[in-house]
Length: 482
Image (cartoon, rainbow, N blue to C red; front, side, top):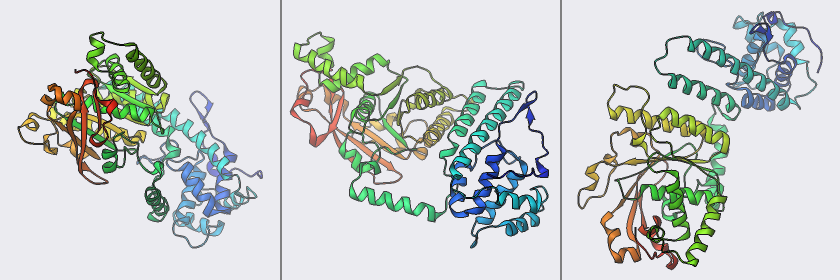
């Protein structure tokens, strides 16, 4: 890369924080700009994907710029503007004309400096490496800026320190993942991946579908649990919400396409969840364990099941009374430390709201529901949220409806999929039903990107397991009752 003169606008202080130099690399910034002039089509895509919305905020509107030198900020913005819809590649002449019309040519270093930038690199072959250097320095400066803002905020009156901590954590995570954000896309850019996705579904590629729930009738309706989507599983108490959620979580963590799973249990201790998982996986009734009526064969099944579950990657947090801000923080920690690919929350109404303490419960639940939906998009994973239905859902002869979601219609609005679990809870106490299983239905009452319908299931109450009604095997028939 050729040596070059500094632009007039570089006469800005590069010293911050008691004389320390702010992180930046002048040569890498020039090399990126020069590459964009040499190869606008190829280099432009790389620069936009790696540098868009990266770095500290540079104006009151909150716009970010990855370049440190103000002259380079102007040149980069002008290159993007010139390339947008242009039939010919932007050169020094057209770029200088654009900057002059905007009154920014002198601040950008003038025509002579633009010519130096254009001749700074022989080719655009190393654009990715140059852009990555610029990106990393931009993220460091943004972290410094966020830290300074945090210090300033801490000296101001704060109503809720948890809200401030959540905002800072969200800001830091967004900076860390900025490279992966696609930003604004044209329909032309989106068309190719959309057609590929349709084709992958048509040929039956597993990667095109979401995470399997382990229930084929459910998967057929919803095409699995998809990234950034909020799946609400709702029912009245003691119908089997937790059991079904555990079944799904265990399948995802132990199937052929196994991935790490996060599980928040706000009601039941983690130890009991694990015992349920063992009973379900080993096909051993809870009554047999409670009564101590275990045979050598039972112990072998328990040992095998324990090994399979222990080898899976399920992360459980059973802290009770979590606020929505605390849950968001812990979910980010799960993602950061264990790279969870799906999150279960059992259940929504047990969370506490942080803001608006004087607002009614419906508004609080609406706020928490919206916050969980935003978290799913932030972490880019599906979140399965368990929720309570109101008492009207138990009226004799009626199946639950969307309107039965307790305390807030916002849950229905925020959710991508709403599944209502329905069965007669008294059926589980019949000896005949203990032997054959209890008929249940998972009503897909809302599906933003697919069909609604009913998935017929069988509930095996002895070891809290749900199965497709048509696929209950002989070995699934329990010997005990709950």
